Image 1 (cartoon, rainbow, N blue to C red):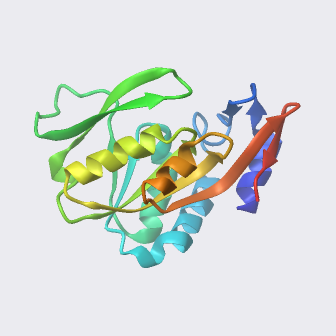
Image 2 (image 1 turned 30 degrees about the vertical axis):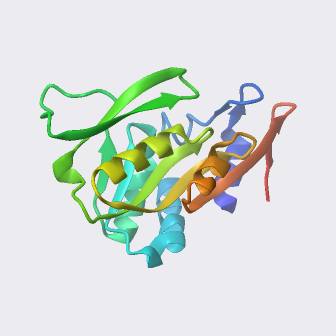
Length: 190
């Protein structure tokens, strides 16, 4: 996705050989026009899959999942990283390790928002080792639903997440695939 790559090149900040900071447009401050274009692109890639729900994880996944849901005309559900006092025990949960934050969170979603028989598209902002995507897929399976695809905004192709997901049988579509970070610059895979 050319527009996304241009934004990464102009505003992304390479912090080291594994971390790309994109907080000026994706995961702190959000560029709504870019998010709409991301939603349209995920729509283009997954429109024929019969998606009935979009599933993501709070908080950064929500910004890219919402316009995708708008384009596909389906609800967006997000897994919470902290269980609310208002959340009943009638929920699915799994543990997810964050590569960036170096913490494990128990993510939870109420069963009423992810009933059996759904065709679920998982959307997330980054793919590194695949932990978040595997965690969300685990919840979808617990619910008796099907993962029809995984949409990623920025994939770090030099980490094993994509291959792990493909080896597990998932369709993975990434809008920007980063091959490496070199001399403070992003090198895209194509």
